[in-house]
Amino acid sequence: MIILAVESSCDESSVAIVKDGKEVLSHLVLSQIDIHQAFGGVVPEIASRNHVVHMTRLFEEALREANIKPKDLDLVAVTKGPGLIGSLLVGINAATAFAFAHELPLMGVNHLHGHIYAAGLEHEITFPALALLISGGHTELIYMKEHMSFKLLGTTQDDAVGEAYDKVARTLGLSYPGGPIVDKLAQMGEDTYHLPRPYLDRKEFHFSFSGLKSAVINIVHNAEQRGEKIDVPNMCASFQASVLDVIIEKTRLAAENLDVKQIIVSGGVAANKGLRKRIFNEIPNKEIIFPSMSYCTDNAAMIGAAAYYQYQKEGALPHYLLGGESTLSVEDEGE
Image 1 (cartoon, helix red, strand yellow):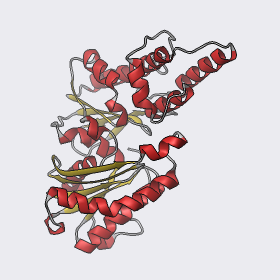
Image 2 (tube, rainbow, N blue to C red):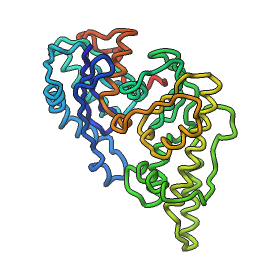
Image 3 (tube, rainbow, N blue to C red):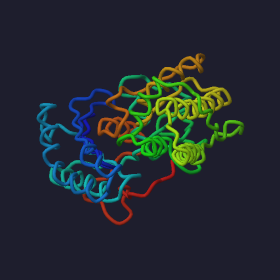
Image 4 (spheres, rainbow, N blue to C red):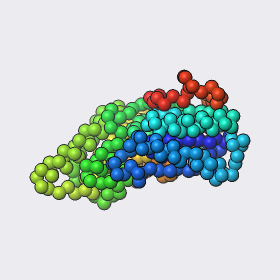
């Protein structure tokens, strides 16, 4: 089954062609990081306008790179949410027009499902599985007993982990996006600030990072008031140590309580090198899989992978049935 997939939930414009949920025939991603760096974060209106500029060209290049024609496709899949409304609508409209023009069925895919199935592009997913989804907008532990079965075990009660990384980076005067920079500096520092480990003592699977972020802000502010200098690598190391202690322990606890066979770590923060190093050492009795670095951040290949398994379960909409109560709602399904 050959699927053309579209992803535009935030600031990456991406089109991919994926065969049978595994084989990536073409994969194009245009990032807007350089554009949004000046603002210290993604500006929704600017993001959606840039999607409009590039989307048609990405469709053409994806088909050319895969060396196939629209008649060779079996399905068009597109991210339906969650994400930035304006950005999502650009991708949805483009995918709908393409499906209509070529008389192809159309499917809306949950962005979070895509992140989970990004790991399945290069690994076999073994059930029951536990998915740790960590990104700029989400921090969730999800139990999967089979394909496209998702039970939410725990989520952040405030900031997502990636959001906390970016805010700490900004507080320390580092550039956007902050996550990779904090991760890199953390490798050079030591945990000297001994920050709190929020929710670590609770035998539940929820997370909270707002208080941790505030602790960093307060230490930096107080140091500035006293004319003292913050050791930035040590602060990055301290912040990352706190985050990873909580995330890894919650994941270990859930994996053991549910006796899962595999742990899937996905989302943008899955690219964190400190996490990749520690989690294998601290949860040695479970198989742990990650997507490749190129599939951690938002991309259309992951949407094509998820769409394949979703199609096996529920089929897709004919292109002419879209509208009203369509499955292409941009609302977060809470999964």
